[in-house]
Image (cartoon, rainbow, N blue to C red; front, side, top):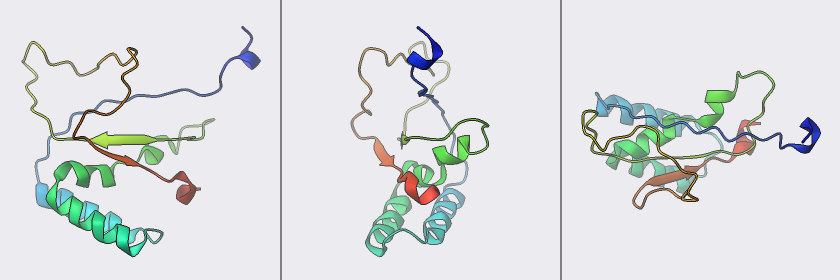
Length: 125
């Protein structure tokens, strides 16, 4: 198959586990990001502020932006992004803990209870 016959799109999957060491700082940063978003409608802003105040995973989802992760990568443009965050029980010494998991079995949906957020890329362009 020639290069012109192959897809120019690449799916990049990143799986991170972060330890929240300062909840107030995390929530404050998320609230600052929400307040600075001039394109967010007031109703959505009110909902977002409430959500980040109640859930650290939701606050993190407002601070981590896939666009920011690839904005400086030469030769690529972000076509679509979605991401989720959820609180987990983490024990790196547990036998059943795996950082990377195989999603080739067709299960690409988020786990039940995960807070999923899709970003409107038009506001970044």
